[in-house]
Amino acid sequence: MKTYHKDFGITASITDLSDGTARLTARAQYGKKVHDKVHSSRKAAESAWRRMCR
Image 1 (cartoon, rainbow, N blue to C red):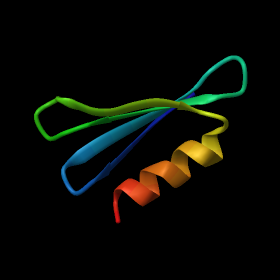
Image 2: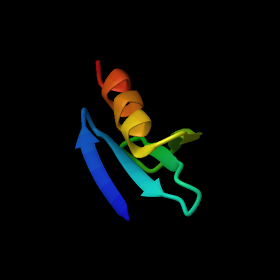
Image 3: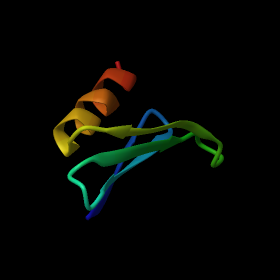
């Protein structure tokens, strides 16, 4: 499952991978990739996204 979040001009997508991990990819306003990392779970990826938005 892939979900999108948008805040402060940055769009993040969280993709669940088959091994239970989740990939967080954040892109700036014009499509430049600013963050791309695999996290241990969806919850960890969402927490990282919230920390980025502070």
